[in-house]
Amino acid sequence: MTKQLRYSTFMLLCILLLAMFSGCNANIIKAVEGTQISKHQAETLTLEKQSNSVYTIELPKGWTIETVGQYTTFGFRAYDPAHPERQIFFYCKMEPFLKSSGAKNEYRGMANLVGQYDAYGYHTMADALVLNKTTTDYFFSIFNDYTSYAKKYGISHNFAKLNNIKIYEKFNSETQKIPNCLDNSIIRAAFTSANKVACEGLFAAQINNKISYPSPATGRDLGFYCAYNIMGISAEAGEFSNLQDTLIKSLSSFSFTQEYVNQAVKHVQEQTEAILAQGRMMQGVYDSYNAAWRARQTTYDVLSEKRSDANLGYERLYDTQTGEIYRAETGLYDEYYKDSRLKKIEDNDYERYLKNVDYYIYK
Image (cartoon, rainbow, N blue to C red; front, side):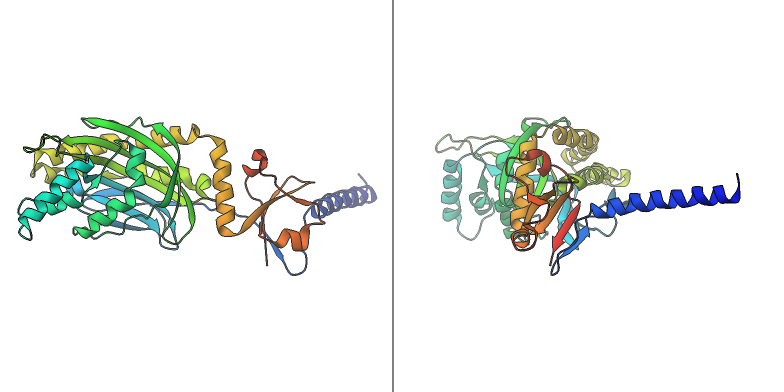
């Protein structure tokens, strides 16, 4: 090949590459003066192992973990201090939950009779919540109320806040059941965080008929229910679908150390069995949560995305030429981009709503 031919070939390649890249640039929407457009980078979490004499767990880098209780009352909440909506939590047990309003009234009567000197815990029972439905979903509908009750009676812990919780779906859990289990389910729910951020999560609990005993006066059951293996993962609604797999991996990595199990053996047998059961149960968490996520209805994915947009002040657009998805601050489309090739995504356009966001438009 002559030098002239090589030079001509090289120049032809340069021209082709320039034309190709020029074509690509032509397809990118240019920011209108007064606004900015940035490429969306999906958030990723890197897990790191943490361990001590009580437990081992793989947590996202930079997260904080806060524990409470011991043995069957042990629990933890782990979260991102910069984005506390990103969280996982687990509690061995929450109790008591009364079986009827009538039982609650009887305990109130007993509490009034004994007054301040309450050796039998009548006041504690009188203030306990009534579990009107023995289901996982009902339990989470009163989760905030229970955490307030727990704090009133001395449990100092930074529980998750599940404000305005709305349960979308319910799935059977494949995790090992405890004895006398009335419901063992995973729910998918939307809620508002303590910071008033729209969030989404997967939550699980096993409802147990802990004890039954009749009232000497009325025959009414004054026993109570208990929730075991309470756990959850959540994040801001707009990013939950991207983070949920890592959050599930982190939660399912939790286990008690053999040293801690040995300590439990020195205490009551119930606590030892409960902790060993927790280990067996955690082995199935990852598969159960993933199965629930795969079985979800995409209709609720769209509702979650719309809820997130409305809460954060965004509207969803798409590029009519490239099909790329834009998330724009509310009002910017009508003010700056109405005459561009960007168009608003229609409410019934589920296919585009389920696509990942490619760009953000903001001032």
